[in-house]
Length: 164
Image (cartoon, rainbow, N blue to C red; front, side, top):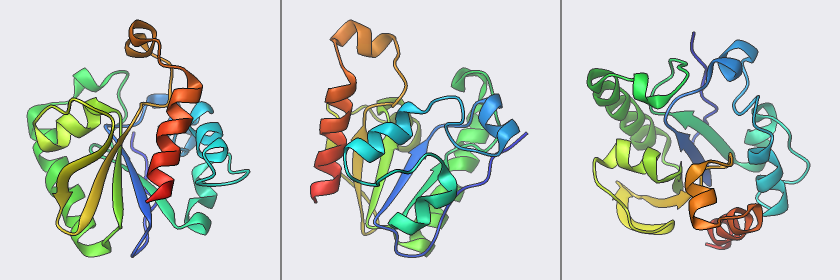
């Protein structure tokens, strides 16, 4: 089971995750089971009143994954799938030329660049002409709890993305 990307040429931002969860792929909808992503986009004023990926292009933003195959966790992805996914994503970025590639979490950034980032926010890395940003992963997780990261922190970080 897979989930299609939402792309167009010259987007302001394309959000990139690792791969979809089963629920999202079954519904054909990015973050179907996690409405926090849409709420955070709205509260950061990147969008307004958006609740699904069907209306993203209206805001000149898109969404994609390194791997399109749905899994329960990203640990189920093979190195070959990651290699092929990186090549395919890079090809799309070179062809479609988004201004910014926003990785949804440090783990997505690490899987693409094969290096660690110490901070969320703007990165020195670029993908050709596209700037690179790391947002917090939208869904609450152990990392958030351990570091006391709140929904407000995630929205504030997305506002940094919007401001450039």
